[in-house]
Image (cartoon, rainbow, N blue to C red; front, top):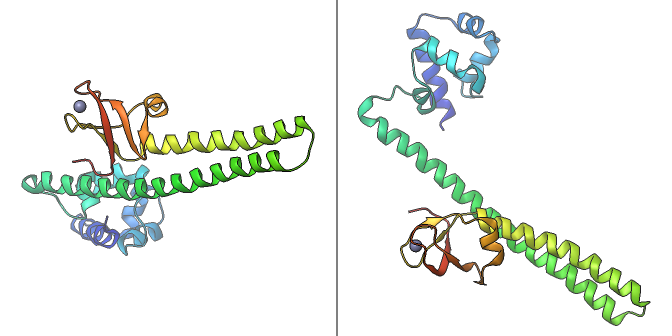
Length: 203
Ligand SMILES: [Zn+2]
């Protein structure tokens, strides 16, 4: 979203409706400083005041987000642009999550490995060895559970049979065979079991 464009649009619409910043602010029960901040692109209107603001300026919420009056012909195009932008942001966030997964996976494995090594090679009573291994296994299990949760929710799995892209339930991810991030799962659309690739972009 282009904050400066939206600000300029609010100012234009306010003037077109013959209001000063002060008058608009009073009608919205906010300070004229807040209005000035929107109009200079320093901040966006709070979601709570948006409906009333749009009513006073004679625009739709969609117009406000786009920073211009969206005419019906390019309405579809504009909302598609917004959807594409949102999808792109999700893709970026998913990418970061998947990198985080690798980090957590490595750390969790190192903790378990360290605990098992210490329990095997250091001299200590048997009960201490058991405790040490449990102490290493718990963060490992939590870490791997977290990794699986990321893998389940970040991006989509793509069915090798019909190409359907979906987010599987957690238990499918937990119990499926996998090679890296490619998992053998049943497609919810065609019902066939195949090796489903992880994809970030929904096509
Ligand atoms: Zn399928």
